[in-house]
Length: 278
Image (cartoon, rainbow, N blue to C red; front, side, top):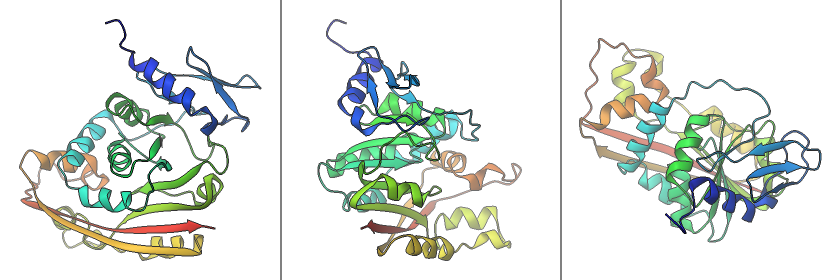
């Protein structure tokens, strides 16, 4: 249809508008984004925008356990409203017009919803190509990148806030990427996170209980000013949602297939850690 941009063209347009937020992961030089969708630095390292509108800026091959089915399940669970309170809490710490990076963004639902609530512009990065493909297909207002923070495709002091939701952290890189007084907003499981599922999968084992004390202590060591907020929600589950919940969490990946998992409700219990980088 005339006048309607392809998804790739939309992605190119968005990346061109924000090219100053990208740098070459090989040599850290500034990049330019051409009208044809070629992202290149002066040393002629280049990357092309894919047909789905994202760009793969990995410098090396990466194997991921995360499949398209997992990201489909995760999107289904997030759309059920189970994490709405968490998303509202995160959005409350982000100012309108802020530039936000979501590290380990997966299929992008968290970032897209948080940006919608806060009025921020978001960039999502993940090692898992399948997650980024799904993000780019469904969410057109954010930029999506397959990349590795160990070989970061971003210049220093680019972001007002960095989201780190239930995923590993790289605090040294986070500090490099933050603007002065920028925030890292990290979500870690608390004691009752998915407790109903944990009780059935790991009954009478040490995995039935969980403590985030070490993770919280490390966060407090990384930042001079830290706030902490607990968010707890218990929600009824439809039978159709249970297999998606099992599929999206590593807890469910190695379960005994002969054992039935029946859940009528589930608890989301997390600590939100907000660290300001002075």
